[in-house]
Image (cartoon, helix red, strand yellow):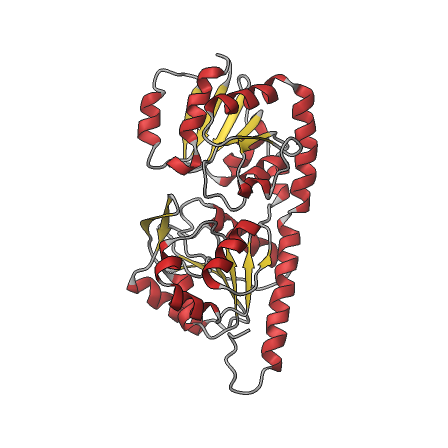
Length: 365
């Protein structure tokens, strides 16, 4: 169960779809229930309706809290004989929260968020009570675990996000015309794209910046850089092109300012054999050891970001060392390994339900 529209790219959406593919490859029957603002991106998706943009955690999330989506969710839960329902971001408004309230199958919840939000602050008595309906609680990082634990109490198993290694490792590199930096993400303040744009002033005239994605800052930043032909605005691109651009770029840059609980985009660069330069955030340190798997710099410091990018572009030995360490790190966090760990949780929950006395609530731990 994904609360965010699968039509819009995002970390949670990507994890849900990739986890479903990995579980199917292991022989399990999987349905993804989520909002969609267009055709479902996968044959195994049950679309629950259109989304609306709602602000939160310094970002804009495509959620579907409307009555029609709630009714479709309840119907899907009733019609499908699910052994387990896996909720990503269980307290996000819409299908995840609806499942928590009305679902009857045992439920596992994975918490992605790092940083307290209004729902946790103002609705704590309700959310704490509803959280007891989760048979198992997981968090994608220590930061996400601490956030959920402070808000809801309880015990959480840390289950780091996974990466589909082959999709990036085997992509055909996109052709380049010179030293190339790639940014992939939403164009909003917390992602730090404006800092990277400022850093370009300190990089050489032959350095190219590929900017993938779009968002609230796209128009402003394109206007600021209208005369800089080194910057190519790609817009929203598909998964295959993202993988190809990652393979072709000389360095991936993730200049986020805050709010990152886990650096999936860093892992994607590592799996694509691309050196990574990113902000020194706790969420990114969950993935990358500074100086070993990536170069990490102070968030918001354009000069430091430019210096780190310049080091990687100018020092082939450093770039090769980062690539080798990054490939090994990505292999440790493969989606296949993550899916196997989740199957162990599913089996534990199903076995617990089978042992429960007659009439017991199957959702409870």
